[in-house]
Length: 388
Image (cartoon, rainbow, N blue to C red; front, side, top):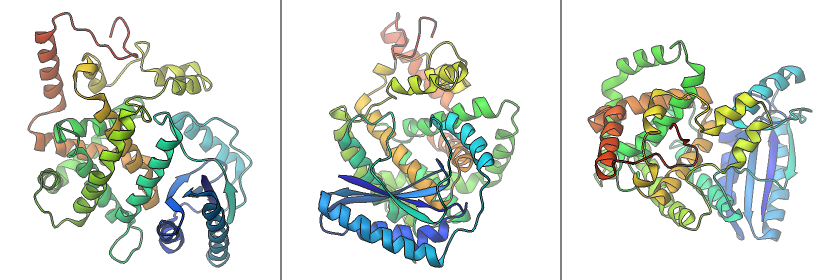
């Protein structure tokens, strides 16, 4: 069974809460008899909070949940959150976040700050198609907790957290099955390109980021080069590259087995569009992947391809599963969604330099190869229409 503890803590900065309380408890729980996995996630619905999930046999899980609840309550009594949230302001923020993440209302009432609740729901998404997939997701996130702490077992924060996350992206991308970096970085490129297409129409985000990248270019390129070498077996002294690489190496075979059985999907289930439609027609179109909407330059080019001939869909499903689990770990280090997009921007700039060509050259070559082998080739994924 899976049980969750909802820890209501309204302070924006949760680094001390995670370092001194929740991460140590989760890692301790992983070693308890009858517990198969323990992991953490962060969310905002009904007020900022952390979730500590336990998976295992019913009796040990229930007993441990009661124990951890008491221990967390004792911690909060001494180290409480003191931020007062105005409900209407939180509701307005939640409406925007809800559209971005497809989390439906209601968004109120706020849960009481500094409280712990037992919940039977678990975090899922539209790429997961079975209870086993949810359980594996939890296990992999739990195993990743070791990568977000420093040598003193404190959760990394601030600039060191950004540096660790950048290395995580590099380590993951360089381990894309068969193709490595040249294909692996494109998932991160897609991630920020889609967001910036809607949020950066005037270049106010990408302009400063490009300037920042140029100022750090040599250092960032060197990190990606080291990540590629490490993925090929060259030892690295970079502890973050080593740690994230080990996490991917142990996680990817498990993810591939899930993908083979259809427990995780290479692309979102159609139910995601159904959820989007509940917000507005505009939101439905944005999330549809159809020809009724516009796309970034990257996605326009990519949609010309026959995706079914690009490689193994099982590998892509597994790889995307790894990235989604990695993204769940970033908020635990205090990394915001905007910082995540910014890191992806920086990483993909460096990755293209290391790969030796830009994304448009790579895609154009793939398209030319497909057209030469199949002159009447058409894009074939479900969301590509007759004019794709």
